Structure formats: C-alpha cells, structure tokens
Image (cartoon, rainbow, N blue to C red; front, side, top):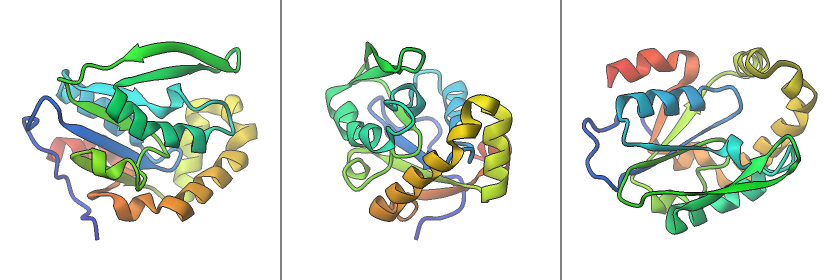
Length: 177
C-alpha cells in the first residue's frame, strides 16, 4: 500500500529522474507539479491537459504517456481548433514530471522512478476545478468524470502509486519534504 507522506528526494537523485502525478480532476496535481518545478527548475513539467485530444480524450492521452517517456517527444492538442498542435521535444538528460489523470497506468509505472496519486474528496475537487475553469469546464464535468472512473477501474492508479498525497493543501505538503 502506498504511503501518505512526502518521499520526494532532495536534491533530485539523477538527471534522468522520472515521476508521474495522477489524481482526479481538481485534486491538486497541477499545483504539485508546479511546486516541484519551482523547487527543481531543471524539471521538464508536462501537463496531460496540453495533449488530451478533446473532452473525450483521456484514454488516448493515457496511452501516449509510455511513448512520451521512451521517445521523449509529445504533440500538444489545440483546444481552440479541436485539432493536433505542435510537437515538443524533451531532453532525456533532464528530469521529467508528467501530471494529469491518466498518467499512471500499468504500462507507464515501470518506466518511472516515482509515482504519486493526489487524493481529494469529490465535492472539494469539483469546487476547485469549476472555480479554476468555470463555464469552460462545467458542461463537461460529468462526461470527464465518467472517463476518470473508467480509467481508474481499468488501471487502478491509486494502488500503483508509490505515494499518496492529500490534495487539501499541496503547498504545505511540499514545504514538509
């Protein structure tokens, strides 16, 4: 069973350190990823939000994570045009952190050094997500939640995680590490 405490190394153990941050929408994944990148500027932070192919794209993005970790490149999704966007290359000699629901799967977990599940209750998650994204996200909340539930039932990312983090106050958690 994953532990519920900070276990991130300081300093990072190697330039090729890899980490996945997973959790449901609004749980605090992005906040944790940003805190890690602020602490360790050498990290390349990739957000799955940048390449989910639309509101029905969780499974497609999840399937790409192992490829990104091995090929060190990814293609963004242009939400405005609802079409693929530009390509991004990663430096294989710098740490990589990928955050987003769908990042931690049975296929991606063996490719990383550390994995985190960010936990937060449903009502707090929804409030946080809708406060953040408002009318853009509100009509898609239930649609996206169903995809999250299917992904979690299939991959069980919470159990795959090396660590479980309480999403109620990510910044406080990170200060403790």
